[in-house]
Structure formats: C-alpha cells, structure tokens
Length: 359
Image (cartoon, rainbow, N blue to C red):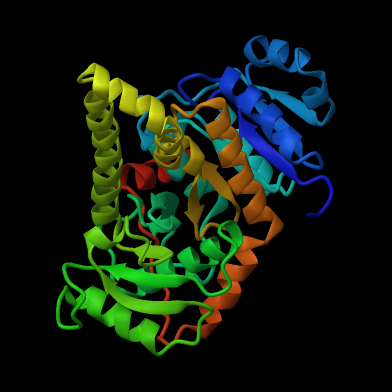
C-alpha cells in the first residue's frame, strides 16, 4: 500500500453519526496505520470526538461545514441545495485529488446523485452501477446493479460485468472471478433479449474473468459465481429478498432455541457454531456498497452500520484505492468485443432539473 492513502469521511452521514464514523475510523486506523483521514462535518459534533482519540486525530484533518444532507432529502434537493454539505465536500475532495476515496453512510439517493454530478462517469462507461458484497455458502460474492439503473440494455450489463469483475479482483483477491448474469433460467434460450445479447458479447470477449452464463436467484446464496450481474430493479429486489431471508433465518433459529429448556441446552452446546453463522450473515461484515464507473471512488456504508461495519466499509475503500480500481475497469473494457456508442448517462429527472438550476 502506498503511504498516506487519504480517505474522505462524511462525518454527518448515518443513523449514529458522527460517533460511529469517528469510532469506525479509529478502528480502521488500527488495521491500516498508514492511512490518513479527512473528516467533513459540524465542528461542535465532530471535534470533541476527535479530541478524545489523539492517535486518530494525529493522522486526521477536519473540515467544518454547517450543511448536512438529511435522510429524507430527495436527490434533486441535494443537488440544488447541498453542494456545501459534508457529503458533497467529501466527494469534491476526491475530484480535486486531495483524497483517494470518499465514504458516507448518508442518504443513498443523494449520494448517488451528488457523486454522478461531481465526479461524472468514466469516458468508457455509459452508466455507473451500485455494487455490494453478499454472504454466500462459499464466502462472499459481488452483486450489481443494486438500484442505480432500473432499466438496462445489453451494453450496460456487459459494462456491469466488467466493473463487477474488477471489483471482485480488488476486494476478494480473485484473479479470474466467475461472473454470471441473473436470469429466469440457466438455458440459453431463456430471458429477455438484453440478457441474451449481453451473454453472447461476454462469451466472445477477452476479459480477465470466467463467464459462467446464466444463473437463477436460488444460486446466489450457493456461491455458484463470484459476481452476479443484473439490472438495478431486479438487483434491488433480490438484495432485499436475501437480506429478509437472513433476518428470517435468524429469528426462526432464535425462536427454536428459546422454545424449551432442552432447546436452550442445545444452544449452549452449539453456541460456537451459531455465533459463526450469525457473524457470517451479519451485514456489518459485508458492509460497503460501491458506485462503480465514476471518475472517482465513492463507498456507501449502511446507514445503521456499527463501528465494526463502518470500519469494514473503510477497508473496502482502501482496497479499491490501493489496487487502482478505476484503472482496472478502464483497461478491462478494452477487451470487450462490442461496438461502443456514446449515449447519455441515465439520470433521474429531478437530477437533470437540478443540474440546469445550479448551472
């Protein structure tokens, strides 16, 4: 890792900000002692926390701002009125080259809108995508898009595949990630035309990945692939279904072990294994969604992340910056066997209106 990698932190973003942000950074500093931090937020809230953590303060800089993006703010409002917010200034520091990557646990829609507006997309990318890590039977997998693009064509799905594979190489340490397109069946004749066309392009492209064809939803948790690619509508629904299933399992297992004294005794005997299961399914151990395809690095932490979870998101940010993810994506797209055409990036209507008003 290069010395003095610098992480921009939106200190006011998240359910328990700024305490979780500062304490999470303190934990990350212990794991990555060469990393520096820049905190953006309200001095009355953040400065006392930094003063109480002298080792963290030694490798940190603080930038005061009164403006904060609220959880209920719409993306358009964030673009129009929050350009001096802690979230926006953290992203601006990446654009200016002052920081290597920005991390925020704040409003997801606002973060996506501000990041797209400030950083723009890479020249070779039509649309950015939101990617995250999910627990599987074999470890973890990358899934994208998780909501940034409701409708996608074949070229978008191919771009997502390239970006997801590059992300898996940096964060999961895989040389040739296994990539699958989420579909209603594994047969080549199934699915819509966009999915089938994307599959054909990926089969004929020279890329640092192993394309596995189509996978179904029940194969995600089995760890059949390292990267699951789909459009944002399907991906967001699948993500919520996976999270809901994990919560259901946890509640059912808890109820079962509380059902009788024999069951409680069984829990005592199986406690170590149950704790391992709980940790594997804990979203804080897989925290850190990434906006791939931007001309800069931005990580979205769960709003309700714990200190451990926020430190995990910082770790994802460090891995991306250390392995120069943007360079990998740009390089890998050169191996895609398709005619690339310039097209207008997908933005929300409110985002377009906001851009014209702020011009």
